[in-house]
Amino acid sequence: MKVLGAAGLLLTTVAVAIAAAPPDPSLPAPPAFFTVGVSRISTIEGDSFHLTLEGGKVVTVRLADADCHGLDLRARDSAKAVASGILETQPVWIFPLGHNVTPATDELWAEVWTPKGWMGEVLVKAGYAVSRSGLDAGSLVPFGVGAAAGTGSPPSAPAFLCTSCTTADGIVYEMEGAGHRLRGRLADVAVDPSQGGAAKDVATRLLGAGPVWVFPSNAGRVGPGGEFRVRLWTREGWLSEALIKAGAAKRGTPDDKMPAAAQPTGSAPTPAAPATGATGSAPKSGSFGGMSWRPIAISKSKGGTFEWQSANFKVSQPTIRLSWNLKPVRRAFSVAVSLMRLDDEQGPGGGSSTNACAFAGPAGSQILHVRPGDYWIHVAGSIETNVTVEELFGPS
Image 1 (tube, rainbow, N blue to C red):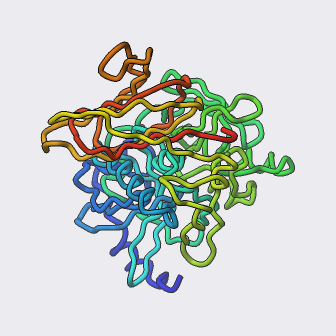
Image 2: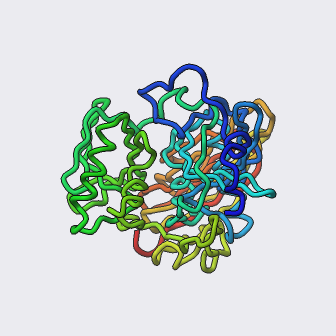
């Protein structure tokens, strides 16, 4: 990039000075950092937000693993609501891939670990973003140090600090720590068998330098041996990036069933291609490998001053997505959304119903596995009706 001239100027204007105390060795090593307080985050736009660093500098954080660009307005609004519900609740950990600094922009491309896992994965699985992969960190300016680097609360579970981590081939790892024993496969790289020895050598060096943090993917077990997809953060950043830099691995998502955006080119990341046929609250068939979310008509049955409930509706598929974006009746009120399963033909308000699940918060999106049948929605704390239920058709 044209702005790489004076490294001293870059460090002065972009990086923030490390605190006098040495970083806590039990926390992820810099440049990963903890945001310290929710007040540091503002202007949340789903796949990006503004972050105030130590010293008052504001940068735009853009998710390196998810992209809302090209989706319809409803999907982008839902992404914003879901992201706000996460980022406005408690501080998070930022894992920088690099900075894009020009006279007009000051963008930090990063992955964000939250109490719900990777924020990008949350948005992609909810259908409010497409997966962005193949981001070339080598095209970015290395990021210095963020807010309170080396301090803060440890990353939320299921992330954990390794006490033992070994590999035989550089791609599958046996890990222990914090009472966990896990067999994991690196989530975002592919290692050719001929490069297994080189990958193992690089990994062994970094794993021995510690600390090593394990971040399991939300996808669960996906490997041929029942492995979890994992990412490993070392003293030199992501282990996968170190393997790629050493020529021992190639970038890719061999075990990821989520869609991948076209690999960016040029000196900075570019938006992913728009999802094909994105006309509803999420990408349609083709954006998720043949899966299609089909909305179920929801209508209001009755309501009161502080609540309402829907008429009955039928669910025919075992996987549904429940999404909501609601304004509380009063500022101090909490909002609760319940999915009720009808046990006979008299509900709601009569007969017998079972609470299938309930969620708190003014906005959110959840993918649920349910028993096909008749259901209805109950909302407390809001009289708005911006609630959608969609069924998943096609391969899961």
